[in-house]
Image (cartoon, rainbow, N blue to C red; front, side, top):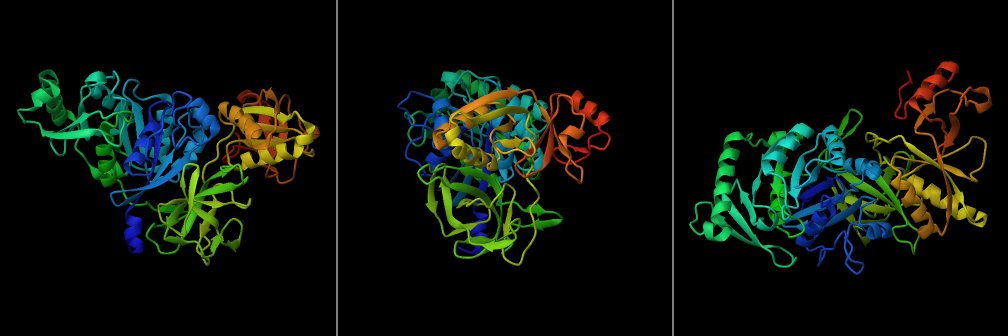
Length: 530
């Protein structure tokens, strides 16, 4: 295949949802259709049940939730698909935001009984900010659910996006029998086959006399009434609005029973675009540009505990990556060869020799990469726009209970901080005997303690701290705490050596600013504190 043909067949998308809407189950079924796995795992279940492929961390298997984004690549009907499965829990939303930077479109999974939930709204806003297509899969139609019209209206009202129902459900709960494909004018009737690769589908025309016998007269009448209302009231399908996240194609189905999953996957792949361009300041880097470029959007330590390795996840933005060629690491300012490039299937990997725009690949990181780093062909020196960092809102003081394990403690905390899951601080002019940890969501404290114990054999002493805001110190010269009037605020340094003030309340920020006229306080993303 030519370079253009390889890039054209790539599809890279993230799956987002509120926790427990069935996102990871849907991901499993996609992998099943692509032949990437032989048997779909369950996200929750008995102790001897298979865990979901994308939930590869031990804590994920135990709790039945996703706590880190995972990457999976597979082939399906000529397409090369890169799926980014994201955590649904709000405490891990920063990981999800970063992952969305690497996606070209998003599949928003909604629980048919619950509708639009809090985390869905947050993640949706990030997608809108990115101007990427958003496809909606209304899941769990095999359970009692809300009225489909009501669900579509709620999406429009709550998220401010138009919807177009590509298909329509026939019944719900135990009566859920399939979907009506509006474009083809056909009924796709499903029969459960015990969770095998695909639900058995029978296609029937809407005017087929056998339809009453297949779905029952009542459901047939209800479907006819719904279609009439849909055709009269819904907005027209506009591909341009879909491409810019202004119109969301809506699909109904059940990931658990496979009903409606394959029709959704096929239609989704037809509607989505090849890899999208990315901005590097004023310059547009197009996927079909021949020179290679990529950016780091995630770092994960100890995916393979036996090797204590660290993997940098990269989104290839343009051209073709070849394993034997040097690339230029912009932030490091030097040429490097990327070590052990790999294609990923959650925690499983396969060494690759090439990758194309749209692909997600992992490379061994000896500690030189940071989130947001740009890699490009030697001779180029542009930088992709930065990936946003979020200010932590919860803080703890931590140290190793066993003082003999100080070395493992510091290594573990620093490595996990470099992944971006936590941020670490220390009082100025002191060693790292104890560390202040800041996180966006409190569940990250549990994950930190679990990982330090399981990966570094370190038990933690923890102490909650009252801080919930921070500001960067913007003074040209370092400031000294004993020369400031900070009240209950605290001066610390982050691991980059930047001075930061931690505050217990928003009122405290103003109090400190008024009493320290020479102290320059900056918002975490820049901008002087008023």
